[in-house]
Image 1 (cartoon, one colour):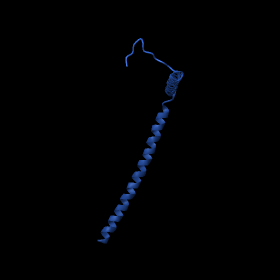
Image 2: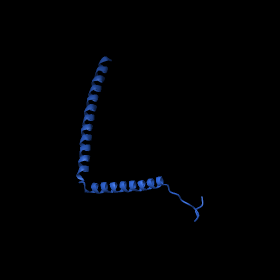
Image 3: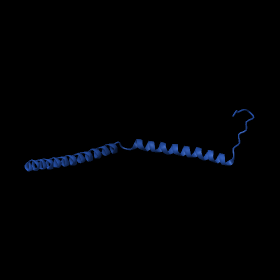
Image 4: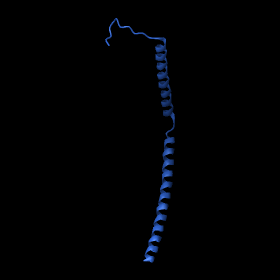
Length: 88
């Protein structure tokens, strides 16, 4: 396709409506994202610290549970070994 002075571009009303709608949509998304970014800048940073702190506390509780379970499994295995040696 070669463009020259004689090339005709035709726009239908449907094309024009689609173009205008797309431009308004993109502008709306832009301003909405800009507003969210500005709002995020004003939020206190303590929320992130609280989230991290809660995650660490939960992880510590989970680790303690796992340690307790391992201890219980070890004691059961020791009892099983004792019974096994008694049977021999």
